Length: 251
Image 1: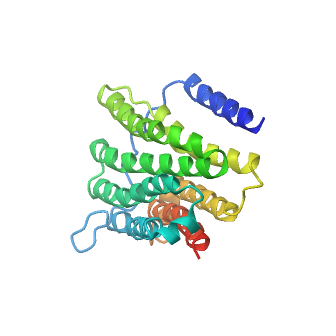
Image 2: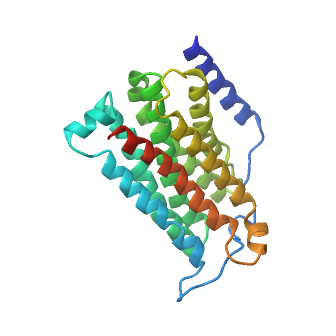
């Protein structure tokens, strides 16, 4: 019954997203509040605040590529390391893609930021499905979910070039992945050894989105740091929670 509820909920959510009219990216999307340079580096804090993604992603990659004994401690099924590799590899790529984007914000550069994030989201949702719902389902879904993530970014960019930008598929990949994780946590409570870490990660990502939306108001309070810079730090904290879960499991 839980499997049926999960699948039905995902289908309904997907249909609801595409029942909406196309969602265009705002014309002011690339106009960040903090555009200060430092030592010749444009948009310095928005660029440098991507460093936590690189550190945490690298830490996660090291955590899931240990020796055979560590692999047995981390995973019931060693195959599950692959979606985690996608998650942490995508995080490292996000550091590079996002820094590249913020050096000179544009749609063409944003592609690389979103592409890395889409791969990371695919890895996260597949790992949670494989460990809490069905390892077989995780194996079957991993490749298609990665392809869907890549396609969502390609679709958005193609519609932008055509003058009718549509973010619906990308939004479904990003927020749909997190929605699926929440549903699994609610439906499969008995397999909850890592639940506190996953919940903390979800909360950190929620904080990141609030900071992103409040970019200008946060920066206006003293012109110290912008909401977008804090968004990077909070989003990196999301992945840090997953890395901490694996570190605790591997002790």
